[in-house]
Image (cartoon, rainbow, N blue to C red; front, side):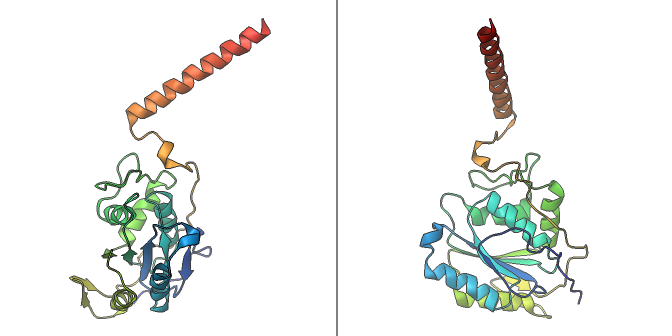
Length: 229
């Protein structure tokens, strides 16, 4: 079974996660709906259950844009990761879990908007399209434990992904299929967009933003000329 070394800077993006077995076929994203200083013990137990049962990475993810972007960067830095065990309570404001599932299944449109999700701002502006597509090719399946994950379920799902022979878990057939066939990517965010909420979401909004900027520049020039006179 093929196993490879991750990228030298893996995991490349900082976050609230624990690093486990680099040769594991699974990562455990736990949706976070709480402020950092109010994270309950149940969430911490899920994160620990992931890494203690053998996950490569196990940690929290909060938003459907920058949070997912960071996850993508870290995962494509380790081709051994082929599964996501997605758990925690779904975010009513961000629909982060749904966005992750939709990204793997449906991808993004020409504006890097995740398709078929009710998440309010599922835009991956800071990722090149090749990073997004690599992530989708590398991840073969998402084990959906949203809103019902327990440490025991997380452990069993991670164990199932580790097996050399196929195992049935929650209606899915899981086993370690080996590393993705292409080399790891050293990926970091471009940070061109730090607040996706304020980015134009379609060509109409983009044109409005450009027209507004043009009008403001014209006003600035007129004011400057008036002061000179």
